[in-house]
Image (cartoon, rainbow over all chains, first blue to last red; front, side):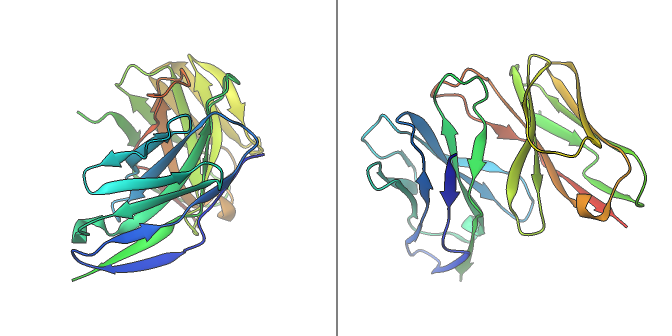
Length: 117
Length: 115
């Protein structure tokens, strides 16, 4: 069974600085997708970024980028120029790409990010 | 327009009661999901429906029964509520194809408190 581990329960970053959130996963599959979701105090789960495992190039969305290391099964999220609005819980998630028909997500336990003014 | 909506957003009830949470998506997706997020923020899938058919049923007590009248709706009915059912319940939907663009979109969540 696949697992997703976020070893940092909480992180802090100064406004305008850069922070990296860690995520590791375990799977025997070769094709899958990885996601980072943000959950602000409003509770809404918001997709931040997505990475296809078959792509070597790291995904980037504005100030958000990932460092995807397939061999190491690592998928970290880098937030550049941190803003107060980035304060939230961040969840790493895994989804199989195999044709099992379920495509369920497996979530990590989350990292709470605090942004200091 | 809200893509995935849930009602109610807050639900406070007594132990032993029966309650329902409704979910609707207007994205034209084929697959819908229910997740439970506990007090430690752990998010775990409960059920998934694809075109009104149940495709994922995790080890959830049978007091929980999902119902999908059509592919745009997935409701969650909970019988004989227990204290441990207190959590935030999220509905989500996706295209369901499993391809690269098959991303789940979440509703705002329903905070259920059982007294």
